[in-house]
Image 1 (cartoon, rainbow, N blue to C red):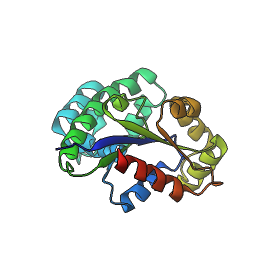
Image 2 (image 1 turned 90 degrees about the horizontal axis):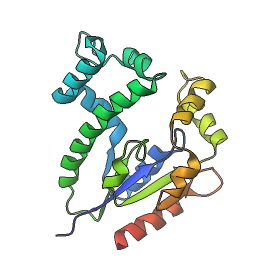
Image 3 (image 1 turned 120 degrees about the horizontal axis):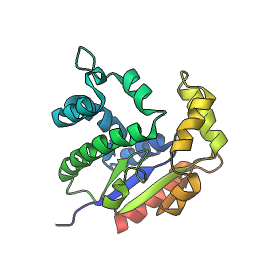
Image 4 (image 1 turned 90 degrees about the vertical axis):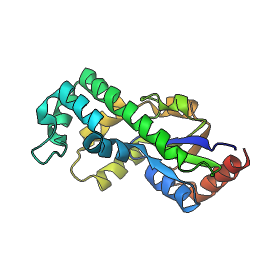
Length: 199
């Protein structure tokens, strides 16, 4: 039996990748939201939880066994080594979870893994195709500031700085969806969907 083609869907912060993933979902394509699953696994996966406590201390979780996001963010955001350390724990857990998820959809022609850090986290190595959702820096900053009222322009730019450059992301992708607001996105999604179903 043919196994589904595994497709990564990525894009920098504010590119609109979640909106695009919903379009694929409406076409009946199962979508795995890696970033959301990562947050869930940090609370639900006992092995990962133990590793985080060992690496970052008991303060990583509050008394209700919930993740102490403020504490962890403070530890890792301005410290690249600590961020790398956290990612080296979370990414393999997400990878294992994704493999289990894929098995539920063996009858589909392709599946999508939506993740911000597909290249940075190394998961692109286990995927067959990559789609990048692209938008200009100004457009992305504008969208994030409208969406995340708690973030400042400086914080958004700092996040962008940590992500792969737009040009590098595009260079390493099989498909690029232009989401600058000048081209209609749905026809671009339909064209990619048709191509992937035909592979």
